[in-house]
Image (tube, rainbow, N blue to C red; front, side):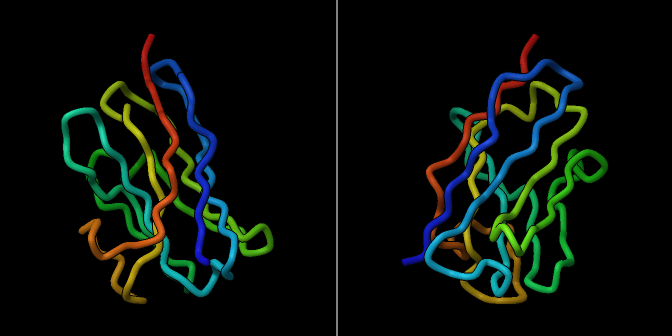
Length: 125
């Protein structure tokens, strides 16, 4: 059974940093494309970043392209999302999930499965 567990969220001041972790169990994560999504209250879940099994990656949002980095540690079977220069607009629950189609890394959440429970990120002074 594929399972993902997110961690690393918390309360941080504007301009601060957080590193989110997405730990996999039940499968070898390096063979899959993994995406990070986020959802703020009252909004749709939106794609943030995705990393291909090859190790290349994509940031979907223009607002995070110079601030967020997605990377993986295959030894630890974990994908990370390094978030720098955080702003209140980054507040939300962050989720990771497995892409249904290798090589796609779509922004559409329905193309992903095996969602984790999410980790809350709150950016506030």
